[in-house]
Amino acid sequence: MTTATDSVDTPQEVLSLLREEAALYGKLESCASRQRSLMTREDLSALLALLEERKALSADLTRIGGRLAPIKRNWCEHRGMLTASERAEADKLVADITDSLRRAIETDAEDVRLLQARKQSVAQALCATHSKGTAISAYRVPSAALSRIDHLHEGS
Image (cartoon, rainbow, N blue to C red; front, side, top):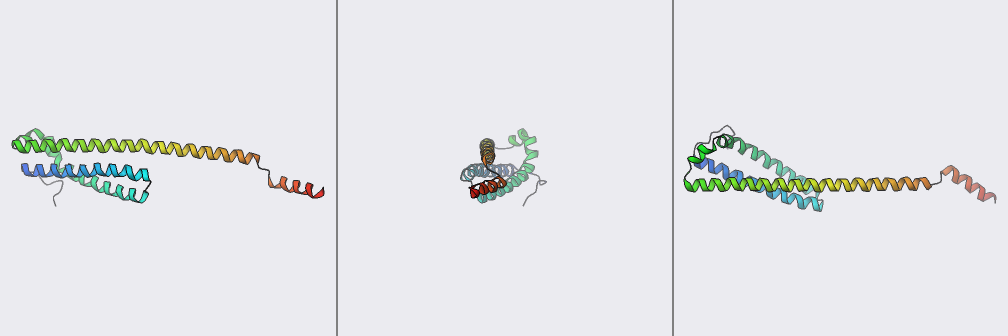
């Protein structure tokens, strides 16, 4: 296994890292879509497992990002060392990575809005329940008053 400090020396290594990064971002996008479904179904145990999967993907993306950082800083130079077909593949991979990341972010942003709406709805329902409980309590007769009423009826 390579580490973030390993140098990337050949165009094939650059393409290999880009392929790996593209695959990871594709998995991240898939997780974002599955997350929406699990949220809608309120399947919390599956949602927690999915969040663990996303955490592992994030760690892998961080590792790949560390390896790609020096390449991205000198992208023009590295891209210039690629053949025409390798450049075309690299350009497509970069576009795919960008698109997958954008879609995952958009899906996550929609999920945030959905969760905020649910939170607001639950808060309003709780307030309504509390208000109803307060109103009902206002009409309750205290137990001491009930015993006096019972004594009055017994004496009649």
